[in-house]
Structures are given as structure tokens and as C-alpha cells.
Image 1 (cartoon, rainbow over the protein chains, first blue to last red):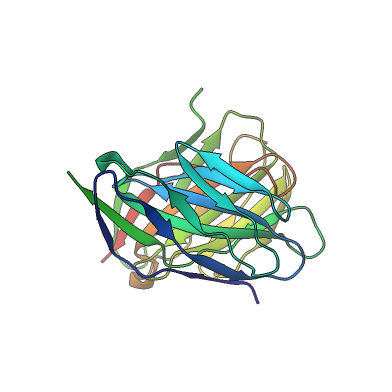
Image 2 (cartoon, rainbow over the protein chains, first blue to last red):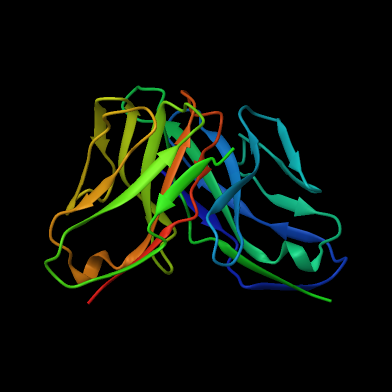
Length: 116
Length: 113
């Protein structure tokens, strides 16, 4: 079956530090890859995505590159802010039963806390 | 643009009671899904729909029913609530295909006592 392994948290950083959250996955077929972010008390928001090998997704200073050969989609940001404190989820989506419905597979998520 | 709206935001039920969690989207998305989020387990798919009149089971469907009579609405019914259904429930929608990403609602926190 499909699965996701994310870097275990919590991750605690000082403001302006460099962030990497590792993500590797197993999936049948050719997945689309997503990073979602969940701020306290809220639902998940799509942060960025990549739909084919070597694509780079980016948004709000975050980046991740679709590495098919290593089945990885690591999230990076050059300089984090206190407002980036949240839970981050890596999630591949693969079609179910040959359909175009993409079931997301989630890991446990990585809690990021950024201190001033 | 409201996106995906879930009601209620909080609910406490007694074991054996039934209730319906509401989900509505105004983006004309064909695909809709229900997930539950439990501590240490990420999110798991309960049921999904690829259009009005079409629903299917996800990975944890037992104890839940769904129907999709319109494109906009996708209610989730708990027939006889159990403490194991204490969770945070999220509804999500997307256009057809799996390269778009999903828009999630803000969730319903359900406690079954």
C-alpha cells in the first residue's frame, strides 16, 4: 500500500534559520505530491505541489522538488518566521481503482515551532 | 468565496446517538471527501464522491454513511455514535483529477461520551 515517512518532530528553530523537513513515500503508480500546512485550530491548507518528476513546487518561500529516483519530496525554506509555526504534512495522491480520484496518503505530520 | 464550509464546529454526542456533519462547497468541485484526524495517525479517508449520486468507501468507512444529491453538499452521517468516533473530521473538495490538490474545510471536533 501507499505510505509516507516524515521527519519526526517536533522541530524547533530560531527565526531566520534554515528549514528542511524530510519526506519519503511509497506509492503505486505515478503520484502527484503535496505539502499541506495546518495552523493551530484550523483545517489543512495546500502549501505547494509537484505533479511530475523533477518539478519544483514553491509558495511563500517554501520549496520542494519531486525526486522520483529517491521517492522523496523534502520541504525547505531559507529563513523561517514565527508565523511559520504549524504542522506540516507531506501527502502523495494516487488514483484509486484506475479512476482519476486521487486518494491522499498522510503521515503523522511534523510539528514546527519557530522562536523569535 | 466561502470555499468549503463545515458545520457544526464542535459537537458532543452520547454513545448511540446519531447525527449528521454538514459539508458544503461553492467552488463547483466535482470531487469531495471526508477525512478524520486522530492524534499520531495523520488523516484517514472515510468516504469520497466523484460527483452527484456517486460515492465510495475509503479506508475507515465503518459506522459512517454518506450521500451526494447535489454537487455542493456532501453530508456525513453517524448512525450510532461510539467513543471510537471521537475525532476531528475534515471535508475536502477538488476539481476532477489528482493533480489539483484539495481544499479543506475548517473541521468539526466531535466528542462521543
